[in-house]
Length: 554
Image 1: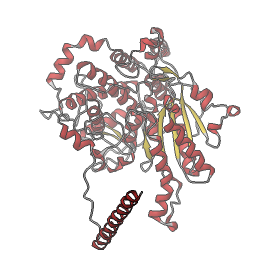
Image 2: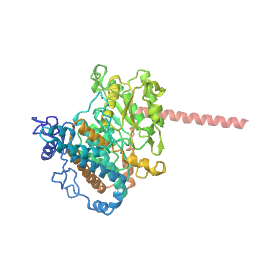
Image 3: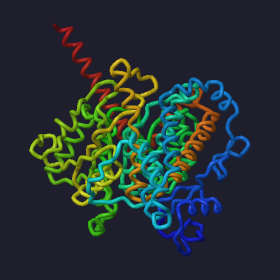
Image 4: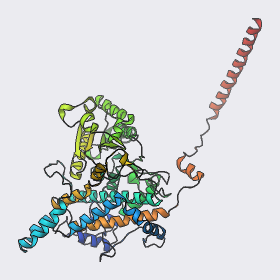
């Protein structure tokens, strides 16, 4: 059985341990359930992930009309009446398939369990379970490169938070497409295929500034889980609100679906005010991110003073900004990169990290490896003027361990030397199109579309976590997957009932700048100004008379 780090039998009010002993992951969940700890913590992975109707506990802090977290009857009826349409969605089928894979694997022994039981069980009893059933399932899952070596290894908590964030991201995407189909969801740009970028959130510190590409939802969720210890239900509900443009969306207040932190979060969740709002635009987040990086040194000088500079490397903030490979053609990115390189050339501190996710597609335009082959090649001998004096790291975009390691290296470089760096997340496969309205068949073959749908990065990373890192069991991950799926559905059902901005006055109040009373100038300045104005008027009159007289004489 998988053993976790020591966890206390009794948790204090902060969820920390008062005394320690080894328990399994399942025991941790049960302890959290009895203590009403509805949060996935980066220290103690404590939440109930048991399903109603399966003989296990299920709980949620989401309250609907009856206060019990029950489903909205109208949405529930709508889902029931349109079941065939929902069932035909490729996203929904992928959700069912992943659930089936995890369920089947949960009935199999992991390799570590098998070795543990070898001493007490006949080999003949174990062989069918391992070789036939399990290997047939694993043969259909794309394996991770187990030969890669890493300078920075992920902790168990970081692996948990990354996989949970990836699962949340996947479920949110599926529910957004269902909500759109049923008419109560209005934003469908999806992050599927890029879920494992979630591990980036574990490499960033609370005081780092972050501006994320609109497909990098998992990074935002992981940052909330890992750094800020946000409640999973609140994270899901807030994201659901953005998809259905609820008036209570904390980021935009119901005017758009965006990623980051908005006015609704800055007061009650002050830690999140370094996650800057980014909408569905091409690289427009890069110039502000660069400005923040350049401003860190100025802020340190003005606010802390020359004698109180940050001495500890870990205290120095960096600015992390991510874009897609299509955005590398945009002038916002190119000008930002150019200025960052110029800053380094002039020895001006500019600790910025550019993250580029390369899935080979800019909506319908095929980029054909332009980023990794031509713009920012991996081989040293192929260095281009774009990459000179800025170190570039390359990571497998499907492998959370490689993503974590290379991102950590890039961030450590920028933090240590206060210089720009770049990381390219390569070989990513976009699943289910750019958005629900994307007609992929117009530019991709059916075979290609189906092969992209089959690229399930979550399953391969869970297998790697269980088999090589001994983090959790398949049964636990199956329960987590099902539980988060249920919580996501509840979140969308509650968000769909919330009010939306329907009046022009409300919209103006939300998107328009407040009127500011301009203070009057001092009286002496006003008097002096009036005198000057009067003199100018008299001069103009005099000049006018002179011109008229000259014309008359002529």
